[in-house]
Amino acid sequence: MILWKIKVGLVKLMYNLEIGIGKIDISPPEGIELSGYGIYRGRRNIGIHDKLYCRALFLKFGEEEILLINNDLIGINSQTLKETREKIGNAIGLNHDRIIISCTHTHSGPATVPLIGWGEIEETYLQMLPKRFLEAATIAKQDPRKVKVKFGRSVIKEVGHNRVLPGGSIDTEVRILEFVKEDPKKVATLFNYSCHAVAIDVRTEDGFYVSADWPGYVMRILAKKGAGETFFLQGMCGDIDPKVAWHMRGFDAAREVGKLVANAVLKASGNSTYVEVDTVKVKRKEIKLPFQKINEKYIVNVLLSFLDQIEKKEIGTIEDIRAHVRFYRTYAEDMIAKLEEGMPDSIETEIQVLRLGDIALIFLPGEIFVDLGLEIMSRSPFKKMMVVGYSANYVGYIPTSIDFEIGGYASTKVPIILRQPPYLKSVGKNLVEESINLLNELTS
Image (cartoon, rainbow, N blue to C red; front, side, top):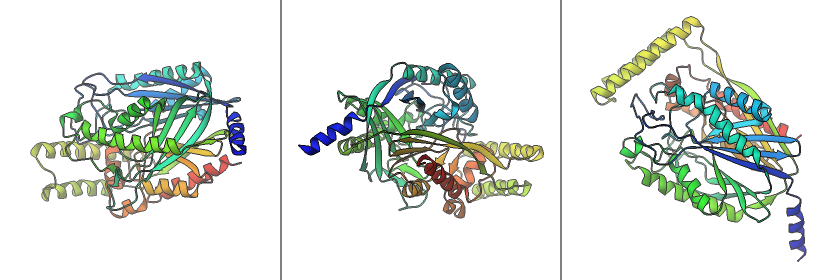
């Protein structure tokens, strides 16, 4: 009986946080090219299997106001990020540092980042996004409700595998945040897990439809189970794919993964415990990711490597060869032009951190390799943690040093797709240190 009284007393302390929810359909029109696979597939969508959404979560704690925008997109570029913050800041009075934007990284959504040959951007659609994000944000701020917060986690090992290192690290748990009214009805659930949204094989007919992939199935299942509005915060999945990927399967594979992850989220919900939110903080730090220095010889070596692939018959049909010739020719032209103009030595991006009581969420740019995210969680001053990738502007992959040593796709091929030099080998290590420093600032 004494324990019961203490628990009720604690719960009463927790209704000092308010949240609001907004949700807007951002599905592209038929015919817009989908993004995530190359080279020059011309994968123009033939319809919508399941809608893509922008979800907004508005948090209010005293005078502190924070907005999280979560999108069923592969990523966003720096211009979309800038315009979104300007529109939202001007319309609802939020400081840019308090606007967080992340994406689920579906590969069955429209091209929204400059991945050359991996889906052509439709400018009309791209220019529409900041307005739609603002609409979701405006709805979220209109009706905030007092909530208490629960945090939970559960083990999940049967979904993902390390696609770079056989038997390598994976994310073995799902982490959740629940926002609960006094009813105690759930207003929203945030779940965080690391696995590429690529269950739908691009080589099947299903690969030509718009879809949120397996995260969409999870969110629909959870909504039916009373989870409130659900947000998928994609984790550190740069080197993690679902085991079902690349097996010529379509929506059935996405559904299979969705059920497994949804069950893990529901298990985490059953294990979740209340967290006293007596502090809410957000911090943002601008950083630079440094490039390797390259010259004309580097470009020649890239082209020679491509010719070696042809000679070894690693590239299949004549159509495939033509697509690759186009890809590498335009790469060489673009990079030579950049060398003549003055190649940048880095790319500008940012890290954001959010604290809710003794819970911390860190929002990182790009496709983080899992070992980097696991190190951040293990060294963080917060034991209740979520590491969220694909936040702010898309910057490609942030690999471990091992990927550079083996000449992996993330460290060598993706820079070619992005038309930029490779990052320094230390890029992952440096990002981890920046992350830990910013998390430590939240404790003061």
